[in-house]
Image 1 (cartoon, rainbow, N blue to C red):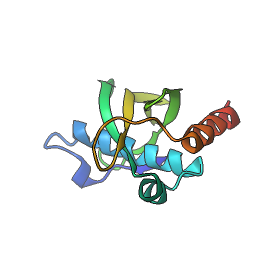
Image 2 (tube, one colour; image 1 turned 30 degrees about the horizontal axis):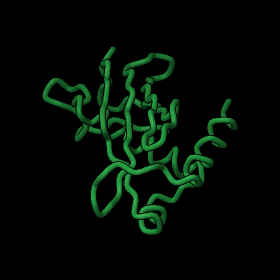
Image 3 (cartoon, rainbow, N blue to C red; image 1 turned 90 degrees about the vertical axis):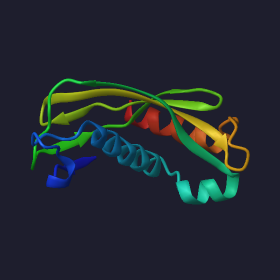
Length: 133
């Protein structure tokens, strides 16, 4: 997914504020799920399940600046019973600016407790990974 850096994304030093990279990653994950055929709003309503961020590991290698065009990736690298691991590098052209790995937990929307991923979600994500391989 492409993202343009705007003034609102930068800090006083003119570089992207570190937390904004997390926003870019969230958007890329949402788009990756959409491309896999998963309508999150309908899925949440139908299954009463939510994806929440359980952990994030980020290595900020180089800064992005105002007006840079970035490419944000979202590769599902591991699908477990109740969670997903997503590798999310961010590039400016060929330069790798950020390395990140985000773990998402699947939870019951009412009890807010971990639950098994529905089979349809696992199938859609597995099919999408195989198409990209």
